Length: 320
Ligand SMILES: [Zn+2]
Image (tube, rainbow, N blue to C red):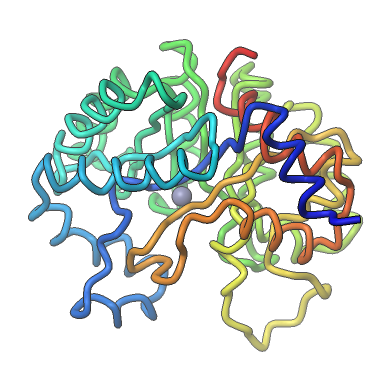
């Protein structure tokens, strides 16, 4: 038996890979001069990309996105969901590039766009760009950690915007691999409060795995009640630095092996490709699935195939 062959053939039979999370407008922006920024802390990277964003032309951004889309097509992908930056640094340039990408590649692959709010959504300038981009994107995007201390307000803005416009919502949560974070729980509670069950996806939810079993089990139950989808980008966070803080033993990967048996819908993403966030990431979808199954010791072929295909379509709101 060749288990890889078995999984890959079944992914093809299901129409091909679905990459549910990426930042293609920043793909291939790694240079010799910014390579050392790869060691910076995540919250510093949110600003370190500003200069590149300000300098990039619509053509530059289009070229990066097109190169990445062609990479996914070469792997037999049927759909991709990508965030695009929309803020006072990049202004509307990624939107314009995304429009051209959809016009040129939309017949070959399903593409869904979400707005990345690297400046938050509370600061009035950031809110201006968030509102402007909310009309264009298919999926409202969020990053509550950017509005640290005001995460509830951030989520209220995202959820009410998504609800008003009848759109899905994808939110980056629990990225720092620590039991000090409870963002997935907060997102599940807010989803229920706003009546948005089944419309929201949690991206990453790494920190959930750092909590004790009792908390995790209660949270899975809450997530099921909220019908909260989960997007795992395995290589994106496997690089977490070790710390001296004690926690239950775990890999810094979304605990897919626990979530799927609890009835949660999990999908797969590459996240950043060849930029200062993930310099060595090459966007290989098999690599992502392989790291997930190894890190979670999860060999359920039926569900791995669903994670790589139909679950992704559901999370991106693509009718099957
Ligand atoms: Zn992301």
